[in-house]
Image 1 (cartoon, one colour):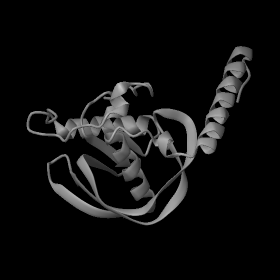
Image 2: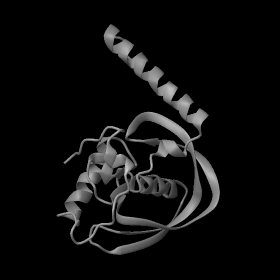
Image 3: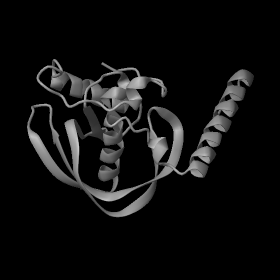
Image 4: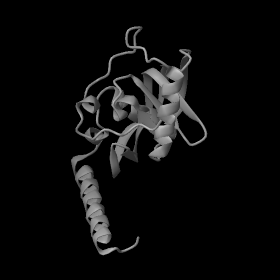
Length: 175
């Protein structure tokens, strides 16, 4: 099943999510994991948080088309290394890419779809994706981590691209 992404102003995207407990346990973690990974691939993402698709569950998936990691009740235990600037995007904001500074590595902990606990060191891209998706769990919008000027420039670029696409659609022009 492919879920629909929420609009960026939806309150669920801007509120911290509580830990999963016995009372809030998803009915079927395996099915949820499969639906989340299918949805992530459908939208061309490398990470997707449950609250991005309207589920108030502290869970996300990240990875590529072949392998992904489901993370229930994720935690970042430790951050380290220099803060590296890398352009990030988000499925909630299609086409918006902005430079974000994040620590180079993390130690993360999470439960998988079988409720097994994992702890792992992530570096580079995996570290960045985990931190981005973890921010979703905390109700943090990645744009709030961007510099004002950088964000303004990126948002103007998206608006120009949308206007161009609209004009092309109206005139029947091909890309």
